[in-house]
Image 1: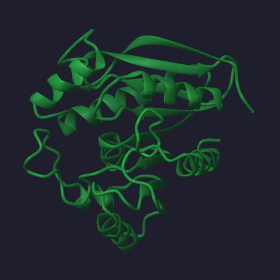
Image 2: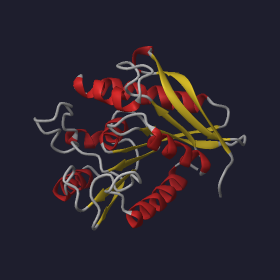
Image 3: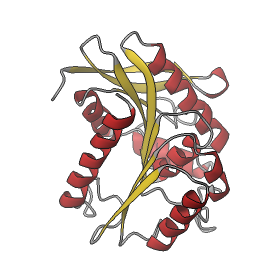
Image 4: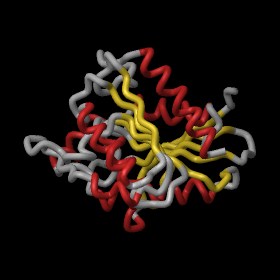
Length: 246
């Protein structure tokens, strides 16, 4: 079922009470609806991640994407804001958690909310989804090829992302992970290490890896796009959210 929806740019309170820009898409009905916080990828708060946000609203969820680079470059084009954020070392982990927490609170305060909220992210947003799910009380989380969870970011990268493997014991909700077998960040070995640790910690998770797919296989604007993997991935996300956000 496809829902009529509306989308708009709003302001939410993030980490430390800061007011930050965010993109809200929601069904037009009275609900109640589950919520999804969409964490944008490293290229930023751009057209493709706004399309993802609207997609979840059309599927019957309140979807909210905070602009994680708003403080560094308010009003800047996504590429410029992303470059500024990278030059500053990326988004600090504590600030990310605070911004996601603010987004969750905003969703749950809406009259159409059913009080449940998930988090989803691609690329660096996948790692940040894992961070949020091990720092906040969420109802579900989806990590789409999030790198740096197991080993952290390579030293040659300007963005500093510490490893998060030791946080697996704090996972607060069911986790869906979608990965490409040809990806190198994270590679299949990293996915296996994370799965082993989550199993050891007795956590509720399911991982799926797609042959012939590398990083960013969901992104229709890149040569890495793989239609079969993306279609199956969205199907799995839909089933996962319907199970835990209804």
